[in-house]
Amino acid sequence: MDASAILDVALSQAFDGRIALVSSFGTESALLLQMAAQIDRSVPVVFLDTGKLFPETLDYRDRLVDQLGLTDIRVVTPASVAIAREDAEGKLWREDADRCCELRKTKPLQSALDGFDAWITGRKRFQSLTRAAVGIFEPASDGRIKVNPLAHWTVDQIAAEFDLRELPHHPLEAYGFLSVGCTTCTAPVAPGEDRRAGRWRGMAKTECGIHMPALAFA
Image (cartoon, rainbow, N blue to C red; front, side):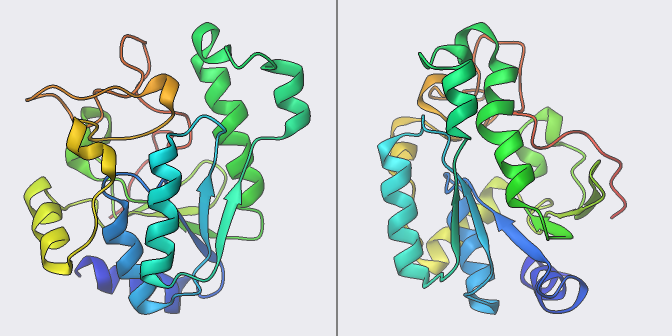
């Protein structure tokens, strides 16, 4: 099955009305978003606004939502009480990056996914060594199913499809940002590095915590 067929099965059959697409609106996001929009423009799209994102990412999100005609964008933010209590100065990322991600991403997403049995991600095997075994369907630790329609796609396939579909690129990609997260923990990538090498550079960290390792079955 190709990616569009996988999405169609997930959205229209396996998890009809019980699935969301979680998107960072990053450098590769437009492709998956367009594929989903072509099947159902009303698919719930969850966007985690950590409060530390690049302005370019927010502008790119708005552009894509308008261009693709997506009608259900759910912007999720960290709990203000938790931020005031644990990261009032906004420097937690320096002291405890894992806790910062938990506070600003993992916990907000858990709440946003209430009522859903599955969620769609844009992870691919080529992105990093930690994602080399990503499956098409994965059981998550919370009992939900993660669907990764582009898991088996290559860099060249992604690039070719962007051109074919005339999709706009994230503005920071032109400056070497091949994977874009928070301003505090994202840097450009050097030639030959993993596309996610610029995330948490210099830290003993490669994932925010949303995607914990799980046994893939497809």
